Length: 275
Image (cartoon, rainbow, N blue to C red; front, side, top):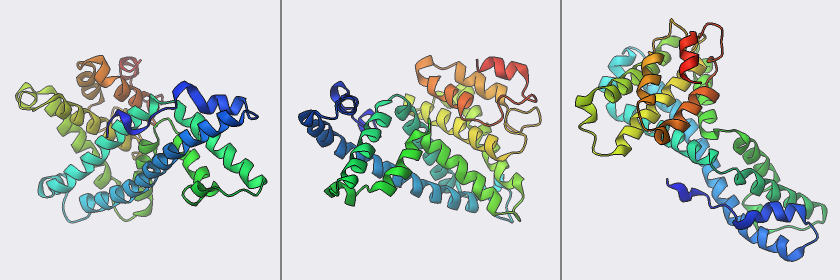
């Protein structure tokens, strides 16, 4: 996925159209521009549902007895790689989404228009693709600052809740082990010197942040507590050693999408590192 995954409307057409409802030419321009974008947004929304199912399936495979989480990660490296790929895509998507505030304006215009058409008993072809019910679900999804990450956090929490006979440690140990592996790779020159490109470095950082966030959502004490199996100080340190442009979104994800950062039990030095 690249930065062209969503192309904003030139000159804020949807905002102008909302502000000038009687300008029919402007309404037509905005509508013709927004419809292809809504179709694209629907594809990503549907993809998030597929990721949710895939993540839960991978968690089931990586946590089931009789193997320990470490044994699973060693024996089933292809599954672990797929898990990492999902996290990488998720963090990348959300980084891009946070840079495009126009999504909410464009989608608001779309919903207003189909509601108005329904009142006037008009039915547009696009409503066969994105009807009012689908538009409402998509609106809730894109209202999140990090919608894909929210989906995965909820999926992981639901996995733990629905598998009560599975020890919680099976899930949290998989996540903490992956975080530790990524941290070691990022802080060890012998490993980073073998990376073929900056993309590999970014991949490791996104996966590390992704598993930290999932861990923080499912562990009762979170990732920042002194008893956490994740070395949060080390993870944040290795992120802050990278160029600011590469890690700003990841540090923001740790600040704003984790659950326990502001708990009283979070060491002051950890909170200070993320300020």
